[in-house]
Length: 290
Image 1 (tube, rainbow, N blue to C red):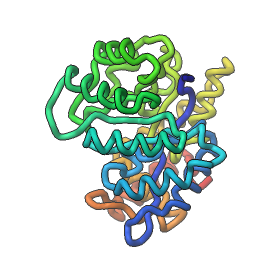
Image 2: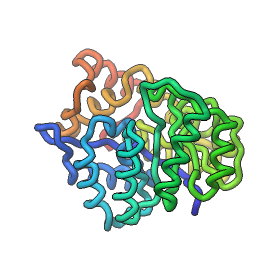
Image 3: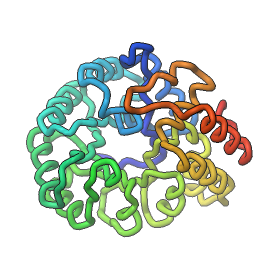
Image 4: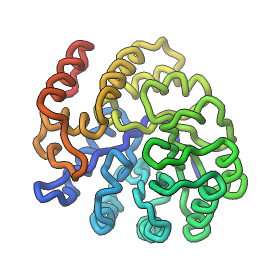
């Protein structure tokens, strides 16, 4: 087991006009943002429309990337409410020698720490060779991890529960566990998180900000003066004014029309908001076409 460290993007899923997954372009996009600075990517996170993409298409992509040169830099999201389907998908992935998974607890139902502990315990019991990054995002799942719950999980499963993506931001300032990665879900938390002992970030907007985010990370690791963090935070703040998935796809559509394909109920920004987004990025001198 090794800690997850660095800049990770919750990578986009690129779709065909019939809204099926375009595996080739999805992989090429992941390769591109790794080349731009990301240490790795998480496929099928919420940004990758995971909850809306059929399991069969997820498996097709897993097969396609199972021998990829960047395989060790890939984290696999499950994006499934069902415990059994989550376990089944993970078994397919582990059979292809994927180890690292990003797993959000189920949405819709109301529950607490005890039930969340039970959910992950059953996953570990059925897929004991998996390494799991917990996904803390109350806005989507309706549940927010407590520090106590995560401490209990890591005590029982120290080899399997290896980190947390904190998009609710109630953990990254105070959660301290040996050999456990804490990764906030926003570039605005990157530098502060690193200063507090966090290990990097996993974010939606690293699809756009990979180069800037990597610069901030590298400067911190190398004890250099920060020259990119202010701009990085300004870019993220612009995106925070919109639905992130809609904004990123709308912006990328300016480069490649394939990004305009998005699964309902998601949608692109309307023309007015898209133009406003582009103008706001221009004001802070951010070139998204690099």
